[in-house]
Structures are given as C-alpha cells and as structure tokens.
Image (cartoon, rainbow, N blue to C red; front, side, top):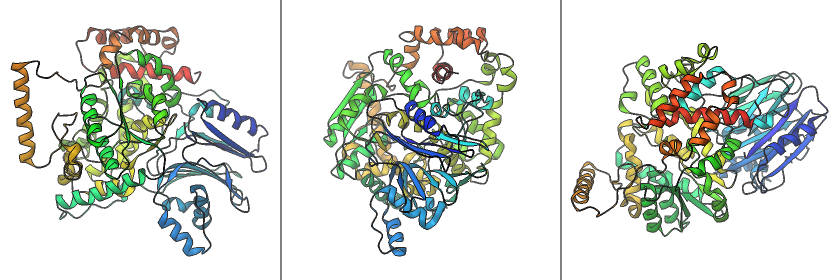
Length: 625
C-alpha cells in the first residue's frame, strides 16, 4: 500500500478534494499508516503520499522554490553521491540533503531524464505547472506497484486499485486475457490488471499526462537488454571475487542508518547470504522464520541464526486455520494479484513490527541463474518456437504451484467465457514474450522474468509486508544485478557464483545444510561429491538405527492437506457460493470435479488450480464487483 496517488483532470473538476480524500481513506488500513494530500484546483490536479513513516518521514508534498513544481515520493534513493557531485558541479551552492529535495534539483537540471540518474526503490509523482504536465515514474524494477486509469479527461493513479474506484464512474469490464493468465500462471503479465480500464505502471517507466490536452505517453528509460555480456575470459574465481565485492556493497547500503533491521531467514541461500553478510559488517539482524515445526526451514534457519549470533524468532504453523484468518487481509493489501498460497509470513507481521523497522529481503532467485528458472534445455533451445513452448510450460507448471492445463481450462470455463478464455493465456504469453525477441535466450528469459515473474508476482510479498515494516532489497542493486546477468552462462548456472561467495566468505553459514538438498554450501566437484556421500551415509544410519534423527519436511506449509481439512469449509463457502456461480465464469460440474479430485488426495499440486479461483473471487468482492 505504500506509494503515491493522485489525479490530473483536464476539465479542472470541482470535486478533486473529495476524490483525493476518499482515495487516501480507502488505502489506510492501520492506525500507523500516514497519508497527506494537496489539491491545486487551478492546475486541475491533486497529489498524495501514503506510507508507514519510516522511509522519507518528512512532510509531503514538497515544492520547488518558485512553487512551480510539486513532488510526492515514496521509497528511498541509494548511492546518491555521484548525483550530488554532478549537481554540485553545476551549482556550487548545492547543499540539499533529503531524497525529495535531491529529486527536485535533478528534475530542474535534467527534466524527466533525471530518472536515469536515480537509483534505489521508489515511486514518484511530479506536477510541473510551467509545462502543464503530471509525471509519474518508478524505479527500474517496479518495486512499488502503481495502478492508473487514463483517458482524455482524467488520469488517476494509486498503489491500490480500490482507490481508483473513487473517480471511475462507469462499470469495470473484466479483461479476458488477464483472467486466462491468472488461472494458468497465478499472476498477470505485462501491464495488465483484471480490468480493461486499469493498468499497472511498467518498471523503469516515465508516464506523462498533459493537462491541457489529456495526452498520455509512457517511456521506458532502462531495460535489462541494455547490458552487455562480460568477456568469456573471466574466470570463476574472478567472478566470485567481484560478485562478493558487489554483494557486500549492496548489503552495506541496506545496513545504512540507525533503523532496526531484520531478515526473514529460511534455510536457503539468499537469506543466509544476507544475514551472514550483515553480521560480518557488524549489523547482526534479528531473524524470523515461519513454518511447520520440524521442517527444514525451521531446523536450518535456527542453526544459521545461532552461527551469526542473531536473536531468532520462530512462528509455527500448527494447522491451516491462519490462512482463513489472514486471507481477507492479504486480498485487501494485494487485491488478488497474489494468491493466498504465497502470503507466508503475514501472520507474524504484527510481532515483526515490534522488533524491527526494515526487513532486508532476498528474492535473489532471479538474480543467480538457477535451473528452476533457466534450465539448460530452455537456454539451449534450437529455435524460437522451442524456446517459447518450453518457457510457457515452465510458467504454468514449474514457476509456482501448477496452474490449469489446456483440457482443464476447456471444461472449467462456462460459455461464453470458454470461447474467450481457452488458449488466451498462451496467445498472451507469446505477445508479451515478443518484446524480448531480440535478446539471447538466457537474457531473454531473465528480462521477461524480471517484469513478469518478479514485478507481477514476487513483489507482492513485499507489498503486503510494507503494511507493517519497510523493505530493502539488496539483490536489486543495479550494479550487482547487471553483473550477475552479464556473467557467461557456464560460470553462473546452478548459482555457482552465489555458492562460491557463501562458501569462501561466509564459512560459518556455509557449513549449515541448505533446505533444498540438505547439503552444506560448498563449491567444487570433489567437495560436492563428498557432501553427497556423507548425506547418503547419514541416511543409511538413520534407516537402520532409527530414530537417530527425525525426518524433516521440505515444505514449510501443508497447503494441499490443509485445503482438504482445516480449510475445506472455508473453501467450499467461496467456490460454491451463489455469488461465485452467478458470475457465469465457471461451469459448476467442472468446478465440482476439480474440487473432488483435490479431496481424494491422489494427485499432487491441485491446490494451485483452486487457490487462484478462491483468490479471484475474494478480490471481486473486495472491490465490490
């Protein structure tokens, strides 16, 4: 919910004050949420900012000295010294200190091209009265999702769609290709929302709306395709050394200031790398883990926290009842773009807020090439047809819980939706992928994933988390990210560089097995073989001398089982409710059959097909549709 919101109205409507106030109210969900607004009736515009008072806590909006330019801003800039130096070179008296003043100075000097000079995670809006234009712009990775609706009369934008409804008078129309994507992939692609009238601002985009004419333009100021591969002569040792330097630098930036910092700690690679490096820099974080008691995450995260001397918190999932309790909150904050299957950690947010101000988060599985996202048969595909076919299969079966298959969607949708939805997800996927067709396969997959897997899926974990604490995302440091994607593929695959950094520079946490394979983080073929041999020997001992140790589940939560038991009544009350069925999207007999398949427990991963339907219906009710 943190972000900026506003209206630009060509007709200079008299109700802007009422609309902007209603927008603020609809996005304020907790007592600590802070919002502020300003209205300029002469310009026909209103701007607002909403947040939790940790980043940029000062009064907003702020204005240029002549009050011709007004800014609202959410987030924070990083690595600002080069920008400050450039501004000092043109204005020797420059002494601005806060991010907002720095942005105004940069805009005064470069205009909208100043976005190329800004680094960090942010969303901003500028009203320029001299040019009679309202500008909306975001960071390179879209870390603050922002929705907008524009026509020749009015632009309206906000971090939550429900706020836009304050100024949209006509009924919203469901977007068919978006529905098809959602039930296939559990996310949307590109700039789509569930509605024809509303779009999401793409990453690294400058939107300009002219108040005199109602003309709208969108310009991308950066994309991953601009990066050039590193020379093939770079060695693995050189890659690890440079990767560690950039990673430590990014963690150092995340550790700046006096705010209380924490890490959501699993037994994986990303969070242990962050926690270990923070401790190495003298900023040992508090750590937080959730999951079923005895699962791998709980077991290994506790060991990692102990190794770095962190104060550790564990929040057990004893049953699935927390999902029914928190799913409405999750839908309120993410508006259906994020299935309740992915709201892990939401139940501990109130406690987390008491302990920390900033969560230094991972989400690095898109940064270091991994077979889950860039398997060899994808990046070595013989041609574009093979590449797109393999990639589509990964998207709806491997990147998350498997979604609907073609036969399932054919029988699930009722007419007339069937004609519009069946096959539409594949067509839409190919359309979105076409924008990256000029890139080599490895970078094509990476660039597509940054926009469509991260910015349209993973980022929503940050969105609902920001309702309580702020987030810093060191894996999205521009230097680190572009370095990782420029590496020769044979060096970067299977997270070899990331494992090398942890193994060489963080030995205390490297010795602790990872959740995925229960092997220590080691590099080198011989070391890996020895680790696997020791693991097999340990399992043999456990097999014959049980109970030497207890089997640890690889799953932190039993969503499949809970949906059959603790959540069954809740799920059925939504799936087969008259309101759901009367929409006419789903054929009741096919929906009943899909639910019956899940209840048998004879198939794995049916939960992903069902959870998206439940989430979609909850979203429609949240927006009073």
